[in-house]
Image (cartoon, rainbow, N blue to C red):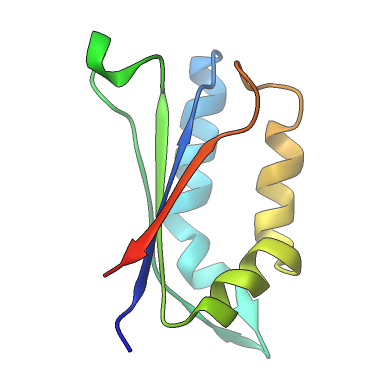
Length: 104
């Protein structure tokens, strides 16, 4: 089974919040635990260039999982992900982020 790559595109109007979220994603793969062990293969935050083709998205999170079950755990039970969601709650433009999931 190939890894699952997930891209999440956010419209975060506050530049300082973008930097804060980028920092959280840079260490997420080490800090997020499942059964006491890291389970995210890769996590990274990217700030796109200011370009009309970016359609207002100001931050892109990339996470890689070995299985759909790991991704579901991340969405539903992971404490670090819950912290990120809480930090962003009510602070995004145009509703929830765009999430794209694909085989790696």
